[in-house]
Length: 358
Image (cartoon, rainbow, N blue to C red; front, side):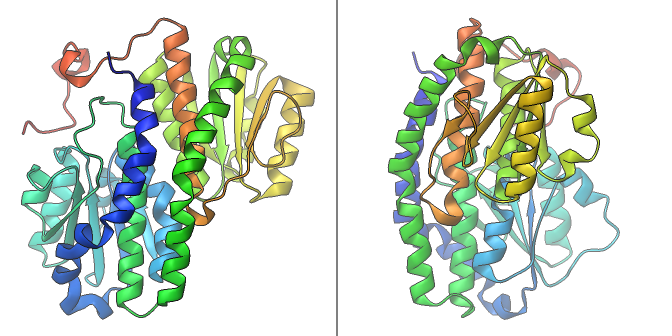
């Protein structure tokens, strides 16, 4: 029987395939935007759930490699806006291509004559069929609804879109483009090694991690997106924990006053905001309770140290940590996560739907 761990372990091969196929995947999009390429002055990433957290994760890097101001926004917030940028490229992400409000937002922008690109798992999805152009996110048909492959594939594909645009506009030199690719190509091997380290880290800290009542995950820059995705995955998969993902600095403005010994604090640390991250870790460890530093500037045996090697793609090296945490919290409590095709109907479906039927 397939498990979520099988999905997480499949990510390195998916990354390699996306990098190999990046030109073909973005070919239709680049032809579509070519007449207005130099007019684009904003990239807007729209999606819900994991399609939002991936956008929050990739946003800063997309901006860096494209040289274009980039925004990530939820479709419900997007639809409430009173003004839209006519020179923006609007990228709508939904793995299944059936997210209701993402489709509605795309339709609104398309009818206004704006550049609209859909990113989903296949060109046959409803979102893809109604877009100006489609980019396959390279994840294939993921067997589980709790997206792990899709999260990483979406991040990487969004960054590849940014790189192709940056190169075509003359913002990225060929040398810089190849340098970014070299960084990305180091991720698969690192991802595998970090998966192994994370499994051991969970075993070493199992009873502490399983006996908290809630988690707060902290991260800065792209790792804020990983923190949000980690909180989402723990809620989706392990179910019994309340979770929240904070931006490193913003999460110091009030939330720390509510920390208790029944909370687990996870700090995703890649060296950014080092003073804040170290101060937070030391405060929790010395004054409150359980704190686990992931990545850089670890403090004690409860932490998980590793050196990310992927440059701006290092978010993909932190992703398996939060995914495995969610998976192991569920599995070790005896919570079985089933494939889509084996799941019973969701009870909330009787009250609301977030996706349209295909």
